[in-house]
Length: 334
Image (cartoon, rainbow, N blue to C red; front, top):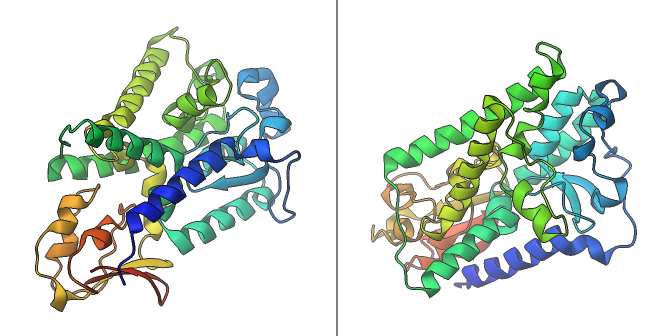
């Protein structure tokens, strides 16, 4: 039986956005889990002395001390339901050289989350993903046609996402050691946040009058970082014209995508029922052609698929496409 997947998804996205960004106001205290220790800068890093503007007071650190596989911000003021984005945790704690006993439980929690749902976190739960879809809805309401990017640009964007991911982790490790002076390293501290549009948007919409990671232009490196920040914000706003433009270059999406194959969520195709109409390609926000081109394999999962399931919703052939959670069918086309 066909289900209105897109309507269900929009409802989940809206509720997720409200809960993740503002849900903290519903709780009067913070909750901790014994097997997920609270992580913070090691004393030797002297973060309070070196970077006082980045200190998040305990009462503003989120109701639950979890780091989710979504692009969010740790700087939501008293409103965040969770502490932040997993890539923020990863880069910051590499820099702090956090003991493995505190570090590994959060990594295991992340792996469990993405193994079960893959990039469904991106397509259904991520607040930045929802903002991009809102821009696309506004474009449609104004009857402005969408723009599509070439396959070459699409591949380039995906490569750039992996480059970002590698750069963020390498820089985080370099900052941990006094290879350069602290003044040189300070500007690159938590490069992940400086490249995350959410860390410039969510502070403003949750009560801050500025973003704690805004950079004053004092030298060539700070100018480069400032320009880069503006470019990433423009990439997010470009979702008005190009569907989920930021998702195509998101470093956390690149990391989550490793679990899109072989995890809990999968998309399967009955090849014999496909008429190669191309509807799945035309509706796909990531512009994937492989679903209607596939002639042999049953599984049609891809690394950067954000699991919106628009392909399943739009496919006119009954039972041609199915969404499964392990062996259990969730949705099917037709």
